[in-house]
Length: 98
Image (cartoon, rainbow, N blue to C red; front, side, top):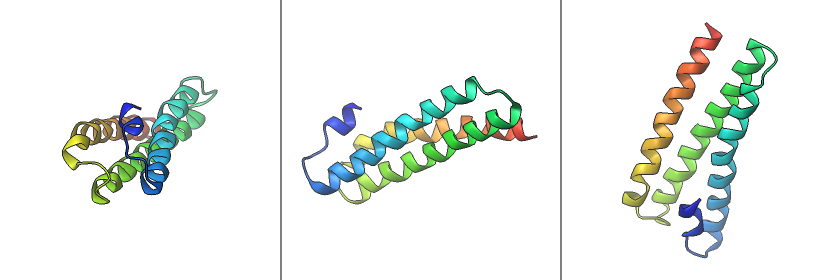
């Protein structure tokens, strides 16, 4: 959230920053719902939602860099973590669906 707070005050930064915040926090919210799922199918669906939100978050972070709103070097660690989270969620999803 500190990255979003540090964005420049422009329309583009505000719109993309809002999207990063929305999708980034939705990852955890969907996983929390998966944790209290009533069935394996519901668990898989919520983990799948978390995975989609993680993918979307990566997209918005990359857009911040490509639009030169944020120095790409400052996003390296966030993008790495988001990629690792995607891998973890994909593994959980695939194992649950198998």
